[in-house]
Length: 67
Image (cartoon, rainbow, N blue to C red):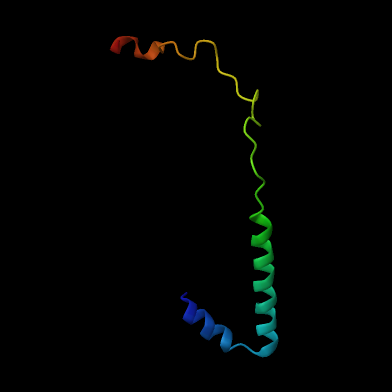
């Protein structure tokens, strides 16, 4: 539905339903504002959460035929 079609549909509603549409639009606006809150990330905040196995750089057994 295009913006123009949406506008036409809302324009043809009775006043009490237009008020409900307005309330719902306001609800959607506040809902999206809450989701956009992003805290600033700090460098090194995940330190110690990820561990690499000691043999990470070793060749894989699956590729022995190609080496």
